Length: 122
Image (tube, rainbow, N blue to C red; front, side, top):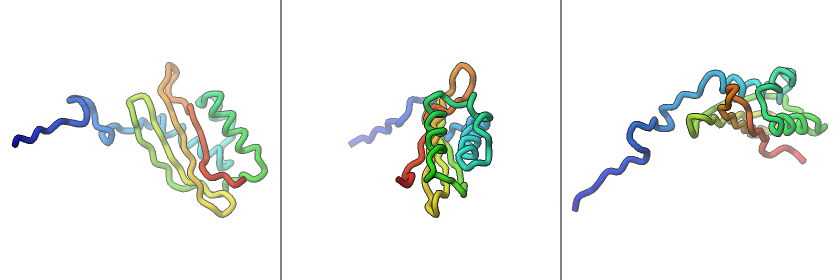
């Protein structure tokens, strides 16, 4: 019996691990996490976030139960050539939580289109 090898991606398409995250996109992800931890003013990142993502960030920071005091490692990957997904660890009320940031490449460059913190204390 003959075995055929079928590539998972079309020939010539860079594999996911071959795509390097652009420094501009990574810088925006870092800036969002810094704003979340109170290390960066919100007005500095407003133009690099969609309205919905910025409102999510402001709403989270407006709750009295949320005060991020620590920031952990940030990792990022590119699921496509026009998208970056980043995750970061943040310390809130003695617990490490996951922060996820989605950035999309648009006509004006990279912008944060989605933002969430998983496991925020109720």
